[in-house]
Image (cartoon, rainbow, N blue to C red; front, side, top):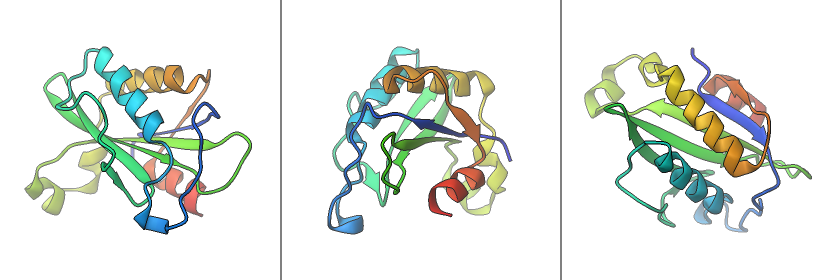
Length: 147
């Protein structure tokens, strides 16, 4: 499986979880919105200019962008663990149609162009104000976050 989950530590954005579990939006809307806007500046296209307040699911924010005639889905998730320097993961996957999503191989989602991954990394590091980040597979990122 290809490494398409970018792990970083940054305190530029506040991580405060709501009291209502999955009924409350997760932290990170401002981070995800800033990332969407920065990626759009990097010659990517999106149907939205700003991240709507209801584009979240469970513990992450999500949006899609198009680059070189391919659509990619991105998620941003803060770590559930309290830390002085919060941990975040940006997940990148190729958007698939309904049939490929249901009947295709899972690996198809992770066939992401390396040049696009570099765009995501550079934009994320700039927005988060960090110098380093680590690429992991989705399984590794899940293990690090949720154990």
